[in-house]
Image (cartoon, rainbow, N blue to C red; front, side):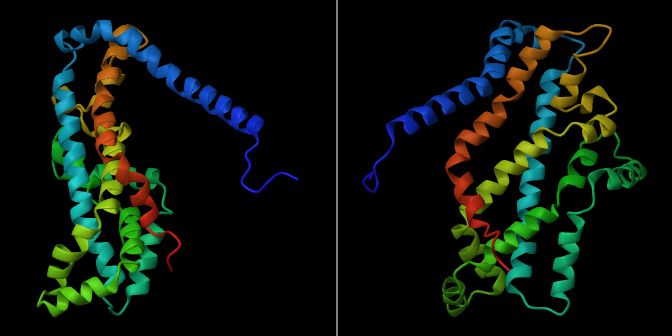
Length: 261
């Protein structure tokens, strides 16, 4: 009989080999991308037909503003649903959850009509504003704040803080994990958007990086080397954000409390 806690060396080796193979298969496309693209990086920024530097700036502005906006709007909304009792709270909660069941394709055309009527085509406002709110993030923040220690909030109230003061000075400073996790996910999702920017950014000066990348791959004149180089450069901001906040990511997702009621 095998002693408790004894590890099977064959199983350990097999798992190690499986993980190594999976890692190689996962990293191989990135290795090819970097190998074939680095030599053409200077050409990406020198190509007068491709406003790549401008598209990088546009993507950065859009991703940062949407991420900050999501945190500023969704965190207070989630806290209000979790901690502030009001008539109709279940209706509001179920309505928020119900919006998650609506496919994005259903709201795409109405959103375009609204943005177009506001004159926001080929404008950063048309790219940023529709993505400032997320029902999913509201629900995640609500689940997290439901499990937040009530004693900390009561201590803040005893010190004379208002409910908003408790949220701003007590709750938020102790919620860095979930804030960082939501920020990472939102930044990556915003950076990788393609269909909406493709429709809204009709002028090359308002292109995001994903739209600029798509312009390099056409049936008439595919520029594969430039595409690889531009793609290699475009993933650097995502890698940087992930490296800086990775230690918060898993902990923050766990702390959202998806098992809450």
